[in-house]
Length: 112
Length: 117
View: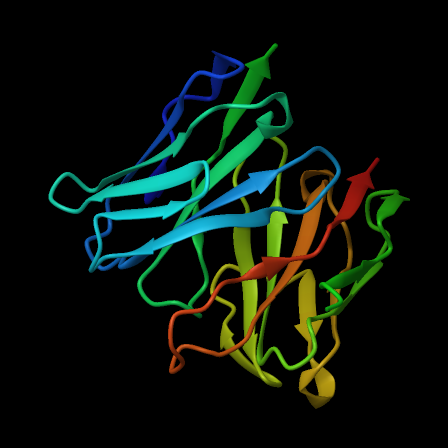
């Protein structure tokens, strides 16, 4: 039962443009959401998070938006850079410290 | 600050053999997780420890997988006997506080890549 869904397996964006990665969840008990970035042969690295009391969190070029009513979140990367090319995983938990439920990931390719 | 350490990085074994993975979490992190990531999938939780006690092992195939976290620090994950479908990356992760703590982030190691032939 996939409680966190990333319906786009891949995304290609030109350097300098905006990358938008989407994530949907089904469990209404989730209240903490994170994005992880993964390069080949490395473990996932934490990118940005948002709690359910917010609808937006920004960190430099990365912004996460949360729409609780739609059970949807998105990650915006502006401007996109070639070094952003990686697999991005959306994750959610009912409370931080509880294990994360992951989506299947979206592979982002940023082309020069 | 040192990250989550895992070893070995790569292991190839034949089916029905056994294998063990080791993890050293970030210093001071009370909670330790083992995740399994099969190619093309997101990580799936196998077991979660709070200090040296098990919080959640509902998705651990207990007929072949075992894990322990003696003294509440290092942890080992063992598979015996291995099956072909166990080929995956085994990710160890840790977080500062457990479920009773304030929101905190889970940090991953680089993973142990297992191929069962």
